[in-house]
Image (cartoon, rainbow, N blue to C red; front, side, top):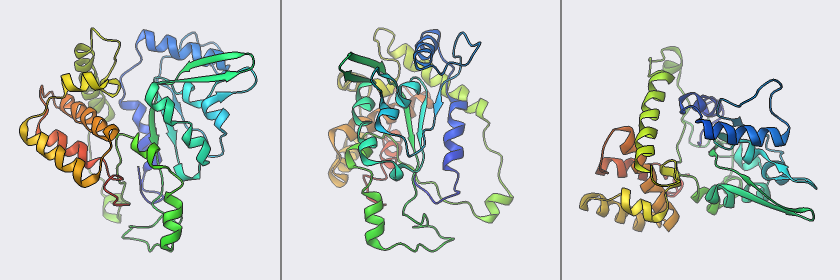
Length: 291
């Protein structure tokens, strides 16, 4: 999420666990074992029943994020297993700390080698990152004037590498709210309504992958994408243009199809339509170099 300070990025991230499906018994057992090993299991709690939400400060070390010490213990990415890992002020994290996320995002696990042995911890988490568009935070803000030079803005954004951004499925802009929106907020859907829609989509995915270890669309391998994300001629031409104009990588191509498949599931659509692919492409803001 990219937007000015106070636009609501942190609030949106904190609300996300409220619309996610509850933990299955297998997932709850996995989370409980990790939290028990790390020594952060709540006293008196026999089982973790809510999805984890971890939000480490930007001063965290690579060992704190990935896991480490002489006898390795799970880090923040493993403590967020089956839950949410929220990284606020993304460019403020040290570059080497962010780069260690690349492999776990792809594999869903982290392996740490020490003299005493090699340890592998699960790390299937939903990554949410938030950042300002520039050091002062007001680039593109119609209410405040940006004070940053072009060099400062480029240096600030360069703190987050292209390969890491390429692994993030959805890029969205969070514009600041005006006084009218703040004072007269329209009533939207409640979390319970959205959660029911998400649970229905997850049920569709569970049925789709009932013969595979895959749990959801985000875990689809290329062969599964080919099988479950068939495109019509219009969608295929649209995606071909996007690949050419945006210079999309193979990874971004697959992530667009995964997101489009999920959008279709939320609408109970059996086949991918043009509007599903279009919306998924629109979520690649950073590929379009609008920032």
